[in-house]
Image (cartoon, rainbow, N blue to C red; front, side):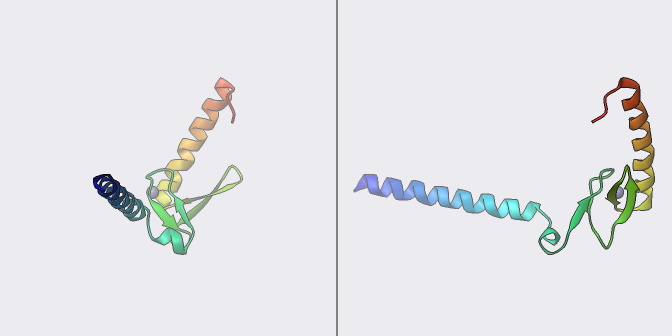
Length: 92
Ligand SMILES: [Zn+2]
């Protein structure tokens, strides 16, 4: 009988733990991702929606930024790293 109570307690504790964990996860992810497509600004790490984003076409890929400043920064970084990659011969 005591053992049964013990298991119940552990089960309850686990349940609370999982519940808290799930809630934490949900809170850390932006709610907007569920409703619309979001893109992560590779420069400052901000999440932007397609509507709000500034789109830059780099290397045949569409990349979304929070502002034109970030786009310019990324474009400069991109050209810098690509020349570096050519020098070292490491091209992904
Ligand atoms: Zn940005």
